[in-house]
Figure (cartoon, one colour):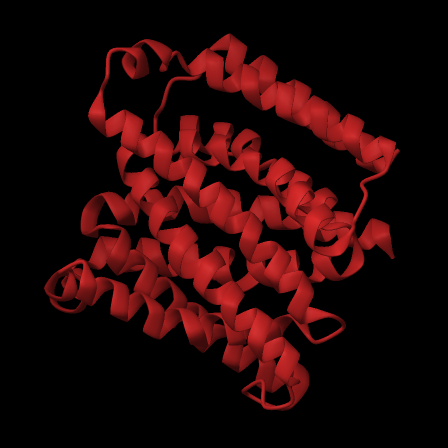
Length: 298
């Protein structure tokens, strides 16, 4: 059963790789608040149809109070707060560099999992995590952004700071999800998170003075809408359901580490579709990170 959870976590990384590329395109055009709001709206519509077909009920009316409580908190922390930082970082430093920093989610999640639930990752998992994180660190060094950071580039500093905060928020969201989900249906659990996230993003847009951009300007941008739709299908729809499935069947730290392969997997589409240059050191880091992930399957 644990192996199935690990495979689901790896599938999550694939989905989030696709969604990150499309969300970066949309965020650069209409901003993170608009993309986040429509992302969760689209995802909820898709999952409601899926739930009706798979469960025979469109909404999670059978969820116990504990699930509603912790999954609602997860929707606020893991979707609203974390994703505002995440999508803002996409616009400032790009999806490839942002997802590299999301690798911090693995140790963050393992630490929070230990403190909140007493989870202890086995030696195999610790070794795999170390190898994966070393590979990702090499990829970061290969990008060569250290000089710009040292020179005090405000946008880059803010972008990396937001990427770190997004990683911490996602880790907290994963732990809250694991606490609330239990053996409850992952699709319905994701619906609860989305139902809370929609008004959450609307309120945040109001507080940030982004109402016109979100509700008037963004829907008129056809390219941004299409990119947001594709990202929503692979991200908060398929990807999040797989991540919840993984959390039910393996350790939170293990799932987070495999999901953390997204920054490695995104290198290829960044070159092919976003026309970005990748150094040899970045490729070496990617190979090392993938090798580390293979340790989970030995």
